[in-house]
Length: 274
Ligand code: C2E
Ligand code: CA
Ligand code: CA
Ligand code: CA
Image (cartoon, rainbow, N blue to C red; front, side, top):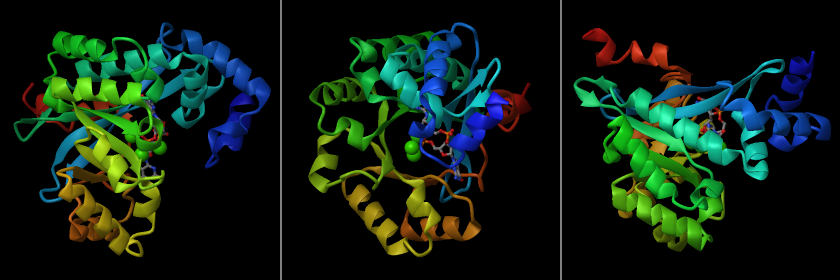
């Protein structure tokens, strides 16, 4: 019953609609979620717009709550950010995703891995050292890892910018997630040590109506030598418009839903050759 309440209240709505009691309950339970093995990482493919081949996967965490069922990250990540649990959760997701994806390749090319990072993780002392350690222990080459950050969270934040610069120096890619939704400006984007922008799904949803806007973002990003990924691609017409706009990569339900590691792995070379 709790599960339905939570689902009904959070479906399509922003996280703050979870009421005080639910929130307290989730906050308390979240502290043990990682150690109780309740966190599951799903993977969603990103395809090359030119070849249609899968070139990367994004790690998306899910929480299998013992009584509430599956709690979506849009609900529990903001709570974890406020309570401080995000440090442990984020570290867990990064370690699991890197070790899982290290052996994945398609057409002989190792897959890249995108992992979401909260600004508060960037404030944890030694975060870039932790990332370097995980890469070393899992054998994932630094250039295969892309960390996704939200522009509005980091752009005015000197500490976060310093940590991103240290990560970039390791060879890790930096993606600006939900691009176009914040107070983006060219000068702000240039301050970030970014390698990629991710066009927010709200713009993808409006395609082909928003085609000239998207083409403008692509031109801007390319002028800064940034790769462009579009997320939330659900319709073939949207993919067509993105390819026409010069977008480099696409991600969305049309190309593959987030799925457990075993399902995604079965579509890689690693599974074929064993
Ligand atoms: P995001 O990083 O913007 O991730 C994209 C969201 O859109 C995901 O929701 C994904 O499942 C969903 N999505 C993918 N393709 C489509 C599509 O074609 N149509 C539509 N309508 N949606 C699509 P999800 O998995 O519920 O994650 C929500 C948010 O939670 C993420 O947004 C991200 O901000 C956060 N999140 C997820 N995993 C992590 C994590 O490990 N760490 C942190 N810090 N945040 C995470
Ligand atoms: Ca993301
Ligand atoms: Ca996004
Ligand atoms: Ca988002």
